[in-house]
Length: 315
Length: 312
Image (cartoon, rainbow over all chains, first blue to last red; front, top):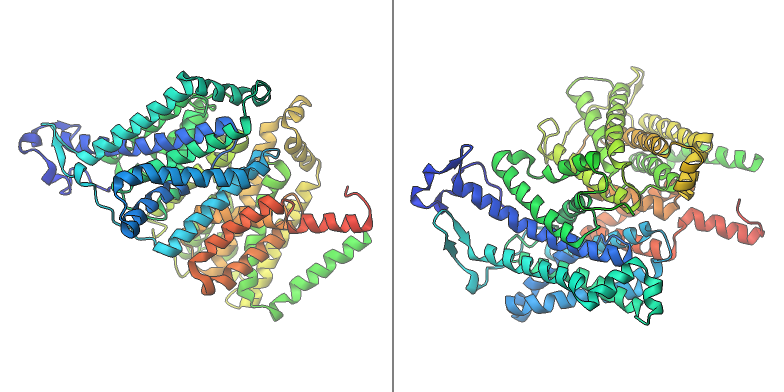
């Protein structure tokens, strides 16, 4: 997100005084760690979005192209909430994902539901249309330049870890999204509700025959999936430039992440997301020209070596 | 058959007199996208593969042509050929990667690969980055036809379009095309009948990429500039919309869709500005929910309902 050249002046003020000595392959250690940290932050967003995509895909067998747009909406809503209604970051953290989830319920009930009988390419096209509408609307309303959102007071400043400075907000983003990912994994893999969900993913008819309301479950799954995107948007609001274009830029990378990881396992999509974020961060340090493309290159490589994805099963 | 012959002749006549009635640049713009959409339709409509990255081929060819004509001094014909060949090479590489996966993954992979191409064009020096390649000379087509004249250029573009259209038409109605349709309808069955499905898919992908490239190369000559827009994912989305709106899997659908979308974009651009994207998106939603056979598909259905015959 923040472009920096190797050891450039942008990072210099962050260096603890004695750190010039510590170098890894000619790169100052704090610069390396700083970029890794940024990479991890991006990786958290990849993980949350690809997790949502994987959950939705498992249950609805569709790819939600609007996922990036909903993430963007999460961030823009956070900004609107503060600017127009004076709603603080903390309330946004709770309310915005709920609003996005409710939007998801409406979309699933009114539109997606009509397409389940058809080839799932139609739902891809439908959600692509929704992404265009959303992005176009917000671009028309707010322009393409970033909307500023300041870091909440509680997270201003940084921790001094001795070998590097860790901005508090970044630590919070990493902690919060890891917690969210873990909670989602726990609910799906370790609770009775998750067991129903997994069963319905395998065989919806049979689960329905046992008296479980599968259509409601589908709606809720979609709502939770997009709610995760909304939550990622709120977390991103103070960390990046809020722009109507942030969603489409991200979703294409997340698609590549999903292809690399395969959508077979929940844990797999989390690990892949975080790992690719770190790799992207490393690339930024050692070969910054390829930072934008490294995920796509890895995707091409994975397709050659292991087409089903690292954690994927052919279905 | 006779009625069909009359129909095609009438369309050709309309094509020939059109530049005297309508602004030629607009027509050429629409024709380039019509060819692009037809090439895309070969993949989506006849092979059942949804590519979300066709702008990569369009854009690569446009950049190659622009560079070859402006920097290397090639003539427009040679430039267009070079552009098309670049799309063939790229189509083969992307095709070999993407046929590894089916269905929804196919769409995601093509989108991601196209984004790779986009960043390549953004960062390379020969493409002029954000500025693109400006001032590509139109020159003389095959040393004879002076393309600075919009109408002459129009006829060259029309000829290129017809070449591509006839090629696609022949492909669809050949035994090869029948195999593609079999793959679209039931891939496992086509495989069990002994067809090398991946080979057919790859061939269809490369043909589609080549003709998308031809469209992009021609586009570069018509507009005398190439920018990043031509390799952008929005352009990939536009061509999907054209095909969907006109009718996938129909011969004329993509042409109708391309003219409709290009008309809409050029009429609306000065009226509603950035809301064009919203309208495009809304059209996607309406098409998918209510209008899945597209303009041509629905018209044909209506026709057969009135005539009382089932479509064959």
